Image 1 (cartoon, rainbow, N blue to C red):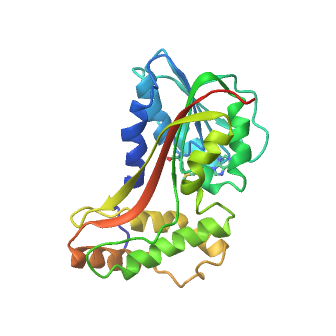
Image 2: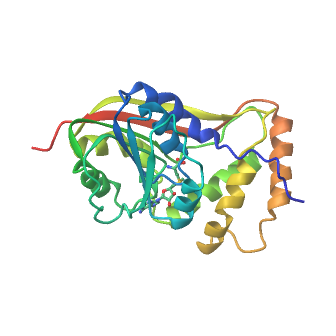
Length: 260
Ligand SMILES: C[S@@+](CC[C@H](N)C(=O)[O-])C[C@H]1O[C@@H](n2cnc3c(N)ncnc32)[C@H](O)[C@@H]1O
């Protein structure tokens, strides 16, 4: 049985949507969203900089770019130009930006430090940088038995590790930003919570990531029945009847000072 009403909004998107409007990004600015995916953060930026601003979203996934482009533009917000680019290599000539942002993207790169140095070439003195990244922690935690949630969490992070991502990136974020020539102005973390009465995003996450989990041998094809897993997640959440501390977001913002 499929679950058409499953939560499609990732609660792990919320910290940046709440935090980035307070890091100095303002009307008329030109913003780069790196690893823009389906454009969710690009659209938040588009609303922030308004119709006289400009947003460029870059990603290497043509599928993600296609779903980003499929969202109709909002004339009250900045136009968004979605472009194909691989952050692991040299970037196309995109011009200079007033702000560079990203969410859950550096953690997927083999060499995030090198990418940040390349991004610094698109910055001018004062350019704002703001990232939300994550790290594997001893989670999830809560008031009851969370073995199914923990199994899901392990599968997700094992996949990131198998893809040669950096599962500790959240902890390295501020020093990496600093090493790339940015002054770190704010660094904080925020717990991503799942409430017992909310529709969980985890079955959606498992469904989206399953092909990658199979590709990297984290699970074997046929071992995970997504519908059964969804029910087990729901049952466990309801039985716990308490807040589940699912994930830890790291938020870092700063400004470009220049390299010596
Ligand atoms: C977890 S998604 C996050 C998408 C978006 N930032 C958001 O928060 O909604 C990670 C994104 O990073 C992109 N990505 C991963 N490695 C990349 C690379 N080397 N170059 C460009 N994009 C990359 C993926 O294609 C994917 O769209």
